Amino acid sequence: MRMIVEGALFVADSHYPHHGDGFLTLLQKLEKGESKTPQLFLMGDNFDLLFGYNDYIQTFSSEAIQLLQDLSRQMEIHYFEGNHDFCLQELFPDINVYSREDQPVYFKLGEKKVGMSHGDRFATGAGYDLYCRIMRSKTTLTILKPFEKAIINDRMKKLLQKDICHTFTGFEKRVEMIMKDYADCDLVIEGHYHQARVIGNYISLPSLACQGQVAVLKEGRIEFISL
Ligand SMILES: [Mn+2]
Image (cartoon, rainbow, N blue to C red; front, side, top):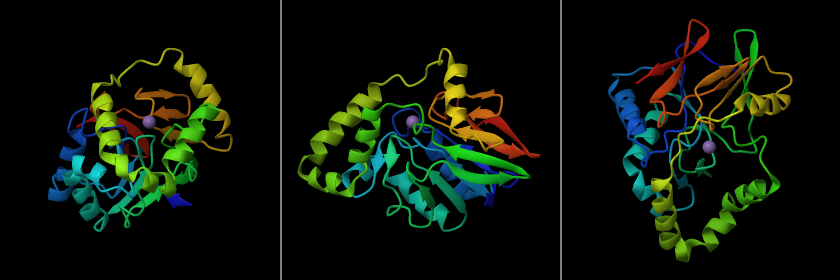
């Protein structure tokens, strides 16, 4: 099992480029050496819409994609695919990319076993599972190619208008359900919910788009910090 190392950075739910450019700024700082981390965890939905096998979708975020590709040749990066960004391994050959099916992924933090996912895997309905499977298949994405510009333009417009920052009422109940799927873990780290809360052994990461924060491993503890 791989280790989470001191100074590791966890970046979740930036929803770039529609909801601020914090993600691009962070990548630029890492590239220039103004920010440093030995290990970068991208916890999903950092791109508001990005998937592989499609050139047009990349035009919306080309600078960030290029930076990530460059960075991935210089440093350790783990990418947990989210519900907005998936089928990414071909686009980022030097990043450890985890698809929805690969998650949760387990890491060691000292003696602790840490389970990590984007967070959309658990406690979702069968319809959503089907949507995810269809949208992530290379065949579907290839068949849709002639219509891609119209579909993607429409999707991008809707995503731009979406209000993504909400307080999840009764979040403790959801966390209770989620934790059942991590029975053998001492700590769980997920994005997706944009809550920036720690509930027992469950860490709901801040959304870079909503709270303007990321998480960092400092002296063996996960802390939320503003960028
Ligand atoms: Mn999500």
